[in-house]
Length: 346
Image (cartoon, rainbow, N blue to C red):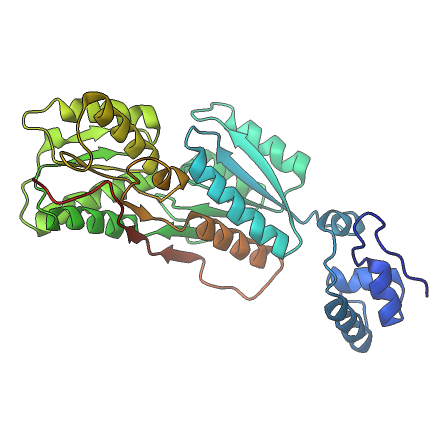
């Protein structure tokens, strides 16, 4: 049987597998798509050829050859905090590529009164089999209800109210912020400002709770005027820092609920001539790219965002492929990363 190579990339094709196994390309297609009407001996011969040639079928071609689309959708907030979204995209794409699925993107701004129609059209036009919902999309009851109505499985990342029927991935935000606050207390800081995250995100409440827990456990009085509202973007971090640094006395340390806001705090401190970390220690959260690219680089909590998204997508694909069920809920640890934006209190 003749073989046929992809002339553009010299990539192994289905024709090569068929030639090695001594079967038709239709039989290879049936084995690859896990159809049942193939004899066990033939199936094993095809799988041996697949392994020997390191053949990776094209997801789009597989979709055209059967009833399944093999497409996972990612619906995400098209927010200013792109660093988080970028890690989510990388993790989800890695899981899809490893399992020969295509990843289809659906950016949407929030708030959006037409989001249900947007997701409905996206699911229909893209023929998505499952959907990954990063924060805060996983908390939108109307989106979850729509996907349930359409019988489309979904995986939510850091939802406020995890659904026991669906896949839920989170990190231990509360523990991580406890650790950040405890570290500052250990450095002699007592007046510690805190900038909360967007109120629609589940992580915001968890991070604030960790801050409060650490103050209480170490006997540091809580002061309400040391807390300011942020929205996970640079500008809100800068505004909140301006309000905190107007206090008398000003805090000797500020924890921002993500790195973008912490960068805003750093910018505001520089504009005011406040020495960092001499007069003010600054802490972020997530360890996104900006944390190591500002000066001084930020002390932060490293959230394994890409790994969380990869796990959410992989578990979703397991469900779509009928793999044995694993725990639908997984929680990840965050790592404290100490850099030059923090020092002992004067």
